[in-house]
Image (cartoon, rainbow, N blue to C red; front, side, top):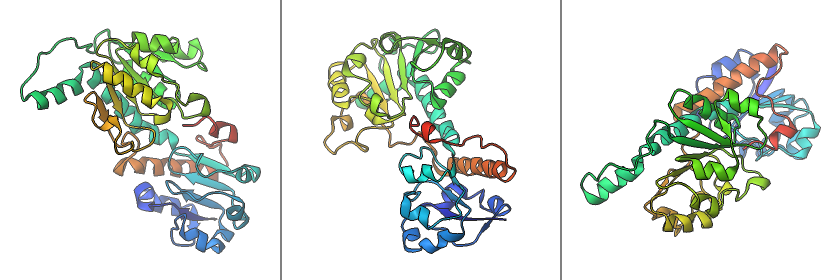
Length: 327
């Protein structure tokens, strides 16, 4: 039987409904550890064949790996692995799998809800009604019929959003230089330049990974080119927007709205105009998995464990190359 450990901030949050299922395949021979306690108890790693982790995964550096000579696989019940993998880890050829696909589901749901709400200019009416203490005139609303939704990046989340949008009477356009026309057609999407996406869309939803190449990708010039009463939604990473430029545009274009679940830095600095601009909606990075939604990620790792035990390929396995382009 495999021997394993749990090392993460909160076992119950992710593995609450999966803990007993995992124990059917793995001898969990010690109490759950955190990234801090494992530093004081490196001897516990000596027997570990597998590690189950999540938010709060320890840095997988040479010291950690030297203490874990039998380690063969890591099951990471969360999203990106960028924050803790090292070159030393990749050199050991240890398998790693992530629940990033499970974490994508609530992001898709959040993005879809905001796209539909924004096409009704929902936030405009919410805030105006509270401010005026009266219902304001209902006009100049794009609505959900034959309006245009722009998607930036067709990775896992962006593609799933497009699949959801198929059920509505909308035109969906997208920018992703790495996606073929054939793939876009299957998603019901027309590929356009980034400039066209911003110029033509009633709502633009960002799903771009944070890479060196994508920092500041969304400029003030792009945002200023948006249609009257359009909305920009960001559930990806705050750094993909040139925030100072966006703020200046939003000060001038009161008709535009920005729905930001992510910012850079996060949260914004105390005196940031993002807190006071009436056409900015801020939510504290809630699009990803929260509360019971996190159990889905644990269940994904149980499914991967079963594949691992049966010597089957891991569906959500991550290579060094793939890790470089993840959000």
